[in-house]
Length: 200
Image 1 (cartoon, rainbow, N blue to C red):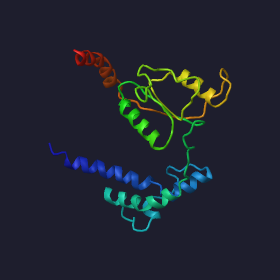
Image 2: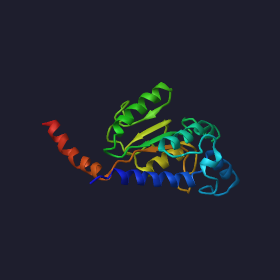
Image 3: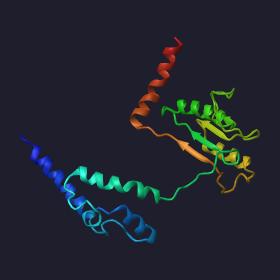
Image 4: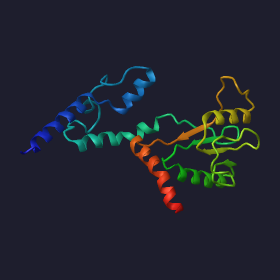
């Protein structure tokens, strides 16, 4: 069966839909700043942009949007996060079998490079089987490991001089990694067997 014409026809329908409903970036920005809905509320792209009278191919659509992208990006607001330090630490919650060991190694390296103190199990004499963030001084700018949230919350509240036991949340940068659950469970299941084989 020759499916070529069907594929071309379907692509043409999608392009026609994009052609009729797409909104130019400047319309998105001006409408968003005014609090107005944007989808489908502006003129078709072909009526607004020079050189886009004939939007008959995917390449033409990409070219039109690509040409306007730098200007649209320049108008976006830039958010600046606070720098990492002891009063606003960086915390990596390492979930098992998600590639976190490599991240922890890089965290320790980066912390040293930027003269930041770090507390990461399996590095700098921190025991590998550590699951509770240290609740007493010295405190650190970087934490990472298989950490319990309650222990991190308590340690950082004390570190920031906030009463422990209330509803306050410590100031911090937080990061974790998720993995497709079936492969992650399979990896967790096989990990003990691999460790036993390595020891034998």
